[in-house]
Picture 1 (cartoon, one colour):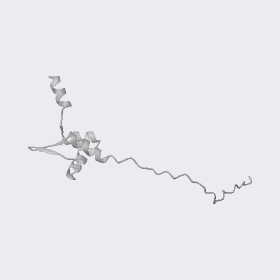
Picture 2 (picture 1 turned 180 degrees about the vertical axis):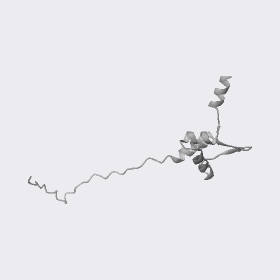
Picture 3 (picture 1 turned 180 degrees about the horizontal axis):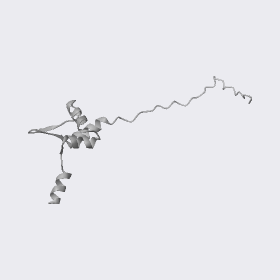
Picture 4 (picture 1 turned 90 degrees about the vertical axis):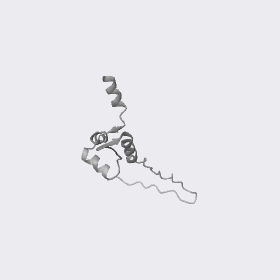
Length: 93
């Protein structure tokens, strides 16, 4: 009988709202807020609200922001027409 229960736990496609919230690291109330705003999709079976496991993964995928692009400054090249900068040796006090 334990094998059947283990298989059911591995193959679960629908989660209770508090379970989905726990997976996201948020509480039940916040999970319901996300559902109310349409950010976390749910299914209804009779009177039960369930969160598809795929909906949790899709929500997280939408949260992940693309990597920041940092622009490097182009190397400064001096042309022959530009004089070199003078070297100033400051006396130490």
